[in-house]
Image (cartoon, rainbow, N blue to C red; front, side, top):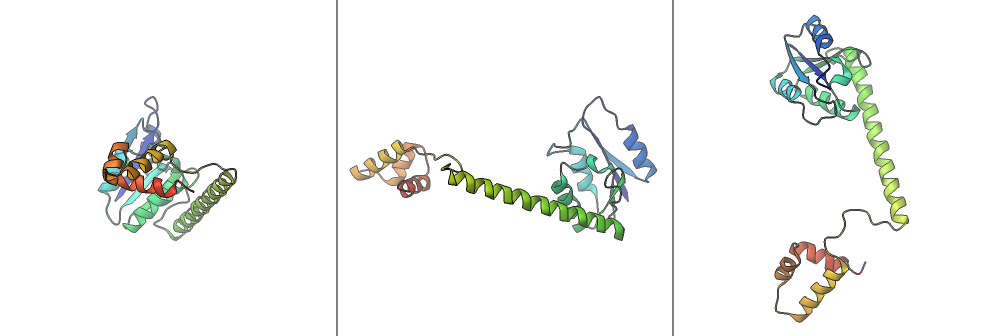
Length: 189
């Protein structure tokens, strides 16, 4: 069964062009998100369409940008469909060559997937380089410590005075015992 998905980002846009194209492509059902941005993590109609699909179905979109937020999101979504035995077809625009029910379409999608992986690796590489450069400049990376140097000194004083367990000291400082232990361990670094 061919199942269509149509989306417009704002309430003043309409779905007519997409709906006509999906109907002409033989979609038996069409799920519509109206006024939902492509960057939205949750798109109710798309989620419902994906839940309703079974092996042998084909998800059809008018243009590729109607479906995904970015290349990685598109690749992950189509990989999930493929794993479930569901095809994917784009009718027009960039990506219209994608029809995972054909060998050519799978090849084109494979190229998209390779590009997405390359993009992920570049982002990761740039992130690691940025972190190294920041550390070299003396910037502390990560979340700020829950306990200040003053709090750690107070904890050491309470431990030295005795009478309270580390659990009680941690509770008095508003942190977990594990956080207190890490702060005491890392203080000298």
